[in-house]
Length: 292
Image (tube, rainbow, N blue to C red; front, side, top):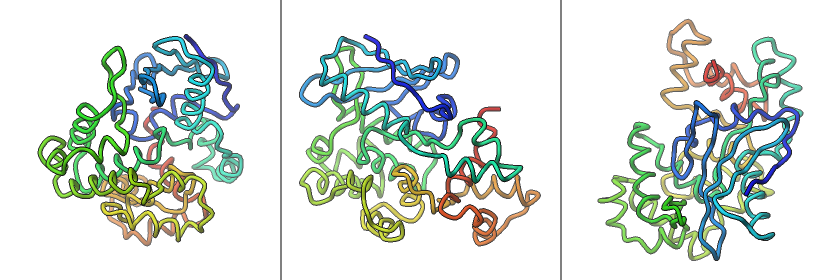
C-alpha cells in the first residue's frame, strides 16, 4: 500500500533525513544510495508496520508493509508528518538566512528540518544515549534496547519500545544487556516516570513555557544536561541553544577560527545575531558539507 503526503515547496527530503544521526539509529534505517528511509511505526492495538519513505515531486511516498484501514492510515500520515517536520514553518528562518552571504544556501537547499522520532520519549532515550560517549557506543545502546524490548512487525523488524515496555525491564537489563553504563538508572527512571504518568515528555511539544523554563524542566530528567536539553529543544521546535560538544567545537574552529581553539563565548557571539534561530543556524553551518 502506498500513501502520498504533499510537502512544502521549501522541503528537502535528503537534507531532512541526514540532518543528524537519528537516521542511523534503529528503528530508522537509511539507504544513502537509493535515498530511502525505513522506519517501524507503532499502530497501537495492532502489529506495528514497516514503512519506506521516498521523495517524489512535491510529495513523500510512503510504502507500507501491508494494507491499512482509515484509522491506521491517519496514524501513519501523522507520524510521517511529525518525523519529517512537514508542518514546521521555517519562513522566518529562511528569510533571515537569505540576508547572509554565508547562510543563504540554507533556504535554497531546504535545510533546517531536523529528523525526529514519532515520540518525544524516544528522542529523550536516544539523546541520553548520545551523551559523553562515542557514536559507536550510542549505536550499541540503542540497538540493544530496541532489539530486546521493541514490538515486532510480522516481517520481524523491531519498533521502538513503549515507556511501559522499558519500565518493565529490570535495571540489570540496562546495565548488562544495553551496556548503558552510568545511564542505566537514568533510562530506567525515565521509563518508570513516563509509564506511570508522573512525567509528560510529549507535552514539551506544545508547552507554553518560555524556552529557558522548558529547558530547566527538561534538565530535571536525570541524564539530561545542557547539551541534551538544547538538542531536545531543537526537536520540539525551539532553536535558542547551540548544544556545543567536542565535534561541533572542532568544526567551528576549522570553519571560522583558522583551526585555532576558541571559547564557547566566542562561538556564541558568532551566531548571536540570529537570536532565537541561532541554534538552527549553527547546526546548518556545521553540517553544510554533509550533502557535498
